[in-house]
Amino acid sequence: MNSITVGSPLSYAAIHHFGGVIKPKKAKALAFKAGGDSVFAKQVTIPARPYMGVSTDNAREIESAIGDFMKAVLQ
Image (cartoon, rainbow, N blue to C red):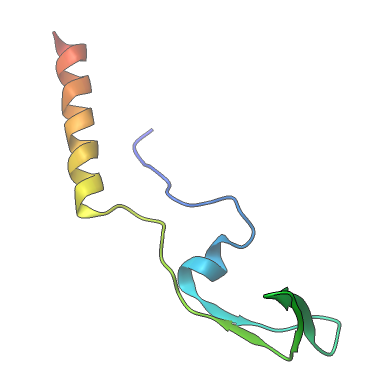
């Protein structure tokens, strides 16, 4: 194995990560509660809020962990 997959199995992960527009599939409007009030909307735009991936700090930590592992294996 020579690869790593980063992601989420959650059905709503992509819309939160990339953002997008949610529209009703079968109804005339989306219905949900916000602040205790009922809200009806023809569509809702969700802004991108990236959370998946590897930051520069993560990359350093991963490299360090791999280096430590390799040293332990090769001794």
